[in-house]
Length: 429
Image (cartoon, rainbow, N blue to C red; front, side):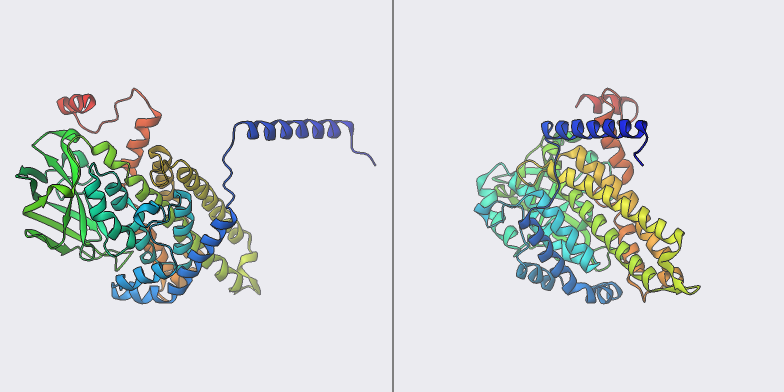
C-alpha cells in the first residue's frame, strides 16, 4: 500500500529542508570536528601512554606522592611533550585541537591527573607566557629547557589575601640597577616544590589596578626565595603545590616577561589552562562513564544485568549526551585558537564553566550506579569523583567564570564586583 499523500508531501518538504540546510552549512563553513588520520594516531598514542600508568593511580592517590620526574620521562618516551610550542624551540608545532584530544585521551585512560602535567608544563600557560616575552633574550634563555621538559615553569598569581581579586595583588617589583627586586607571597602555586621556574605576577611602581601588573620569572635557587608545600587536597592527591615567599629577591632584567600594563595580554595565556581543564573534565568524566558502563553490564540483579533496567540505561544516556555536549564545546574552543596555543577567551571560558558543572554530575551518577561499591576504595570511581570535584575551582571559580562571560554577552552592563568609587574607577581603566 502506498503511503498517504500527506505523508509523501511532508517527506518531500523535509528532504528540501535537509538539502537547504546542507547547502547553507557548506556555504557558512561550519566547523567539522572529525579527526584526521594523524590526529587519530596521536589520540591512540596518548591513550596507550595513559593505560600504561592506570595500575599505579590508586597507589599514588593513597600515598599522596607521585614520582613526577618518572611521569615526565614516560610522556617524553611517547613523544607527547611541547605539542603546541614552535618547532624553532624544539616543540612539535601542533594545534590546540591536537593538545585537547591528546590530553583527554591520557586522562581517560590513566584515570588520574598526573599524566597530564608534563604536557601542561611544556605547552600550558607557563611556556605560552614566555612566548609573549618582550625580549628575544628572555625567550632564548628559558624556552629551550621548558619545551624539552628539563625545566618546568609554574604560574604564581594567587595571593593569600585576595584570591580571585587578581588585580589587587600586592607582590611588588621595584627597579634596581639593571634588574628588579621582588617582595611578596603567592599561594596555591601548582608545581611548587618540583618546578624550577616561576612566572610571578607583580605590581610595578605602585601603579594601581590592572595597569600596574606585569610578570617576571624567578628561579628556585635565587636568594630570598622560599617554597613550601601546601595542604593536602581531597582529590588530585600527590599534585605538587604550595606557597612562594619572596624576600628582596634580585632578578636580572632578562627575566622580565612583560612590564606594567600587560595584565590583559598575559591572561590570554590562561586560555590554554582552561582548555586543559576542559580536557581533564572530558577525560575523567569519560573514565567515570567507562567504569559505570562496565559495572552495570557485569552486575546481575533480579536475574538480569543491571544495564537492562530502564533507569540505569537512561542514566547512561544522560551521561553520554553531557559528555558529547562538553566535547563539542571544548573542540569549538580549541578550534578558535590563534597561533596554535591561544584559544579565544569566551569560547574557552564557557567550555570550562560547563565542564566544571557537568563533569562532577557525571562522576557522581557513575558512583551511584555502582551502588555501595562506589563509596569504597576498591573501585576507581570513588577516586575519579574526588579528583573531578577537587578541580571545580581550577582555572577560575565558576562565579568568576560567569562574571567573565557576562562581560561578553551583556555589553554595556557594569558587571564589576567593586562597589562605590572603586567601581567607577575600575570601569574607566
